[in-house]
Image (cartoon, rainbow, N blue to C red):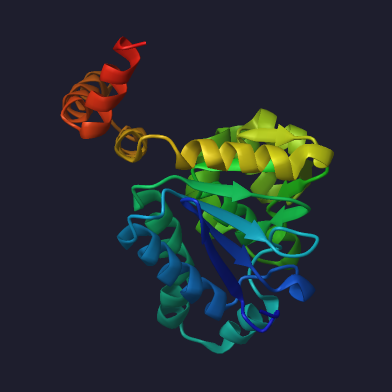
Length: 254
C-alpha cells in the first residue's frame, strides 16, 4: 500500500500495528489520518484478537504534528467550528486512554507538537536514542493547547511551561528524565527490543492489563483513601477472572 493511504493497519500475533503513513509530510496529522485512527481504535476495542496496539510512523520520523496546510485553512472558520475541529483530535486522546488494551507509541526520529501529544496519549512511549521530542507550536504563533493537560500531568508544572512557552526540542534521554518517554532504547537494537516488549504484552493476561489500565487512569484526582479503596475493588474483580485462577494454579504446580 502506498503513501496515499494515510494509516496502515496490521494484526500479527495479538499486536495491532497502526502506522502513520505520510512519510513525505513527516506523518503530519491530517483529518483523514485522525478519522482513520478513531476507526482503528474502535476496531481494536471490538476485536478480541487485538491484545496490544502499537502506533508507529513510516519513514524517518514518528510525527511532526498537525498538517499545517489544513490548520492554516481553519483561520477563516468560526470559533465554534474550530473548537469542534480541535476536539476531533482531543477525543482521540480520550479514546486511547479509555481503550481497555495497552497502546504503545513506538517512536523514532522527530516526535513533535500534536505528534508528541499523540505519543504521550499512549500508555507506553518507546524511543530511540537519536529521537527528539517537543512542542514547537509557540514558534509558529500557535498554542500546544490540545496536549497541555497530558503535558502538565506528565512532567510537572515548571518543565511543562518551559516546553510549551519556549518550544524547545529535547533529546530522547531528556524526555525520558522528564517523564515524556517510558524507555529509551539503542538505535541498533530498536526493532528487536520493541518487538520483544510488544510480544510480552500481547501474551500477558488481557484482563490483568485491562484492570491495570483502568485503575491507573481512574486514580487521577482521587484522594489517598479513595485510591486505596479503588485498588481493593479492582483487586477483588481480578481475583474472579479465569486468567488469575489459571496463572496461580500453574505457578503452584511448579
